[in-house]
Structures are given as structure tokens and as C-alpha cells.
Amino acid sequence: MRRFSVFLLIVFNVTCERRSAAARPSFVLLLADDLGFGDLRSYGHPASATPALDRLADGGLRFTDFYSSSPVCSPSRAALLTGRYQSRSGIYPGVFYPGSRGGLPLNETTIAEVLKPLGYATAIVGKWHLGVGPDRMYLPVHQGFDHYVGVPYSHDQGPCSNLTCFPPDIKCFGTCDVGLVAVPLMINDTIKQQPIGFPDLEKKYSDFAREFILTSARRNQPFFLYYASHHTHYPQYAGRAATGRSPRGPFGDALLEFDSTVGNIIEALKESGAHKNTFVFFTSDNGPSLMRMSRGGSAGLLKCGKGTTYEGGMRVPAIAYWPGQIKPGVTRKLASALDILPTIASLAGAKLPRVHLDGFDMSDVLFGHGPSKRKAMFYYPMDSNEKTGLFAIRLGKYKAHYYTRGSTLSDTTPDQDCHATSSLRRHNPPLLFDLEADPSENYNLAAPEHHEYEAVLRKIQKVKEQFEEGMVFGEAQVGKGIDPSLEPCCTPQCTPKPACCVCP
Ligand SMILES: *[C@@H]1O[C@H](CO)[C@@H](O)[C@H](O)[C@H]1NC(C)=O
Ligand SMILES: *[C@@H]1O[C@H](CO)[C@@H](O)[C@H](O)[C@H]1NC(C)=O
Ligand SMILES: *[C@@H]1O[C@H](CO)[C@@H](O)[C@H](O)[C@H]1NC(C)=O
Image 1 (spheres, helix red, strand yellow):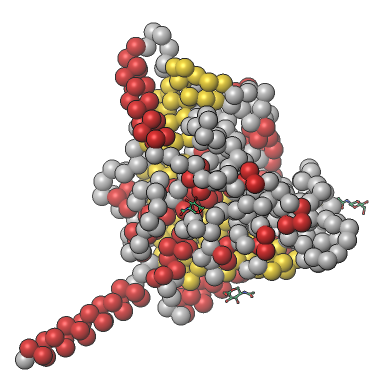
Image 2 (cartoon, helix red, strand yellow; image 1 turned 135 degrees about the vertical axis):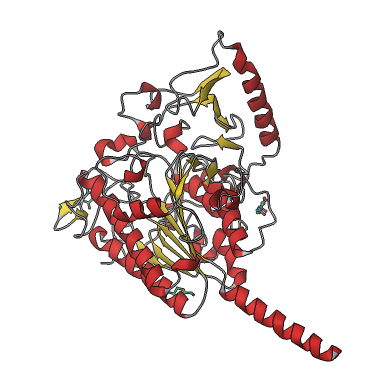
């Protein structure tokens, strides 16, 4: 009798384990590029056409107070994938270039690496921007991703003046970086096309994403798909289906193309039957590139945009979507891209990396179980450095600016504070804004006639000191400089470089 029950227990255990493995949720992380707080219809833009994202917003949880960890790409993407501030992983100052010697250090643990030990299939489609490096050692295939299809950096980091951005043959508007190799399309660590063909690119991405979802589902394998779109980063481009189809011009068409891929991904989830067990999260890497004028995005009512630590630089749209699990609605709770890794780890039942994480599990916010574990958001400038440290801190509804500075990336709007001509300014006492009463950061509360705010500033100062005491800056990876011979070239022996690196 006794032996019998032991036997039963073993059978029960095995079945249980098998069932829980099969029931592990899948994850789709959708990341837009330079898409601002005011760019989506669900965030108030009157002329954007975003039917798929509207459906996510209607059927999901939309965040009003969600932050990327940096006002520019590479650091923000490092933080998103590792749950750690870019200063720890060394992703500063600024962003990577095609010939950068550095990259996201391989001992950093990405979301893909958190999920791999549990048997997840992993893929990234689109923009990596965390380094290429010697022997392409920093590509995503070395950071936990089984599959990579995309451009390893920004699609303006290579000449574009002769390239077609919209069909039938509308050339890309404006100038991109010259003196570099043409922008490559890579599959895993191999160059498939150089330069990339913009009008056909999105279909390649969308088809790959769909195939990846269907294949993983057919194998009963949980998956993690990271779709890091180039949209809506400059230069704007789109294929036939989106060209001229939005009321918002080239930016609107590029956004519509991104939206159509989001729609295709959701369709693939439904078709594969994975949709009931897939957590979808959408956000943007940083604020809008206002220097591109109407071809850049919009920060809505927020101040300034990309490159700055005003709200427009780092407060971004975000939607969590999981029908049947996450109740549709809007949340004003504080959250950040830093929180995605701990949240995914918690939903998957995965072990957290044994490092200092800056993110918090958002599950309580997602499922309406309680307040946000995140109480503060820390703002580093695009070129974070140990000497100046933090530029600003949000604690609850208050935000204090210790330093402010404009940026070329936010030039052209009427607000002079956003422009590159507004050079670094230290504020003592810090500027203080109530982001609930004054989300546009117009009315400084730290004026001599407002003694009542001294206590708030003291509290923020304490939080700042505590945070900075625990901050250890990693070796500067972008600071390792550039070696042109590291730029990815499809015909490595050719001359003269970079012009000869061409493979249609
Ligand atoms: C990665 O290695 C570097 C160099 O040895 C070290 O300084 C850093 O702390 C390590 N990072 C992690 C996350 O282990
Ligand atoms: C990319 O790598 C994955 C995993 O090693 C492999 O399954 C896939 O076939 C590769 N893709 C191509 C196009 O070679
Ligand atoms: C663009 O095309 C023109 C005419 O074919 C050529 O003279 C020019 O060198 C090309 N520019 C670049 C950057 O490739």
C-alpha cells in the first residue's frame, strides 16, 4: 500500500512538471524607435493611423507614467534587456556606431538569457544597437537569442542619400551618416544584403516574426519574440501597403507600417493558439526626435524630446496586453522599461540573474493586486558620467532637476530649453515640478516663496544619495572608441572601403 502511494506521488509530480512546462507563458516585446508620448491615437494624436495599437490599448492596460531609462537608443535598449541602468553595464557615453569596439558586455544577462534555461525559443527582429565588435562578438546570437534578423544599429548610421525609402522610387529624405559602410541586413551573424532595401524590409520582418511564432507554437515550445522596430526613427520609410496611407505624411506612413506588423504578430498569435498564453508588451526606446520636425515624432504635452531629461525625452507610451489575464484600462502607476526583465522572469517562473537589478516586478500593477513597487525614477543624461551623476529624479508625483541641458535631437521646437544652445546648467536648489498638476514642467515650485517644498526636496535628496551610493559605473563601452575595420562588410577583402561593401 505504502509503496503504491509513493509510486502515485512520483507519477503526479512528473505530470505536474510537464504541465507547468507546457503552460509557461510566451512573451512578445514590441519596441518602437523614437516614438513619443504624443504619437499614438490612444495617447491623443489626432491624425495617427494605428488600428492594431488602438486594439492593444482598448484591450490592454495603458500606462500614463512609464519611463525608458535613457533619452537615447543604446543605453535605453541595454537597460530594457538587462533590467539594469546603463551606467552599470557601461553603455555610455552616447550610442554605438557601426565600428564601435565595445558592446553590451557578454556577462550581462538579457531577458533572452533569463528564459533560455527554461527551454524558450528566442528571437530578435529589427534594431539591436548594442554593439557588433571584433568578430561580431556582441551580436544578439551571443546574448541568448537563437535567431536574429535585422540591422545591428540605427538605419541612418550609413549613407542613405541614394536609397529608396518609399516605393516606387522616393529617395530617403535628408542625409544620413556618410563615410561608413552601407547599412546591412543581417541574419544571425551573416550579412544577407548591403545596403538594405527599405520598401521590402518590413515584410521580411513581419514574415519572420509570424513564422517564428507558428513554428514555436507547433513545437509546443514557449517563446520570446523581441520586435525592435526601426519605426519611427529617421529616415522614415515604408513599403507599398503603408505608403501614402496615413493622414500624417511620411512619419504617419512609417508608424502605420509598424502598426501593421503589430497587427500581423497578434494575428499569428491567434492563428497559432498561443494568444491566450502570451504576454504582449509594447513601448518605445525614448522620446521623439524633434529635430526632424514634422518627420519626427511628438511628445504631446510633455516638455522637449529625445536627448533631454525633461519628460518628453524619457516618458513614453506603454501598453501591456494579455486578454483574460490583464484587465483593460489605464494606469497612472509608475513603471519603467527597467521593470520588464523582472516581470517576465516572474511570469515565467525563471530565476533572476544574481546581479544588482534596477527593475521591479510589475505583476501587482498588471493584475491590479496593489501599488507599484517602483517609487522613483532616476534620469541619467545620454552621456551619463560619474562626475555629474543623475540629472533628475522623480519621487512620487514630484520631479527634481539637478541639471538640465538641451539637445540637438530636440532642436526646432519653440521652447528654447530643449535646444542644443541650452548648455549644461546646474540647479541649486533643484528645479521642482509636480508632474500631476503640471506634467509639462512649466511651473517651478522650488522658489523662495514656497517654503513648503523644502521638505520634499530634502526627501528627494536623501533618495538620490542612497541611489548614488549603490551605483557602480561599469567600464565605458561606447567610450572604447571606433575602429573602421570593424564595420560589417559583406565582401571583407574588397577595396576601397567603405564604398565597396555592397551585396544586393
Ligand atoms: C562583467 O565583467 C566585468 C569585467 O570583468 C566586471 O567588471 C563586471 O562587474 C561584470 N559584470 C557582471 C554583470 O557580472
Ligand atoms: C540562425 O540560427 C538558428 C539557431 O542556431 C538556426 O536555427 C537558424 O537556422 C539560423 N538561421 C539561418 C537563416 O541560418
Ligand atoms: C549617388 O548617386 C550619384 C549618381 O549615380 C553618384 O554620383 C553619387 O556618388 C552617389 N552618392 C553616394 C553617397 O553613393
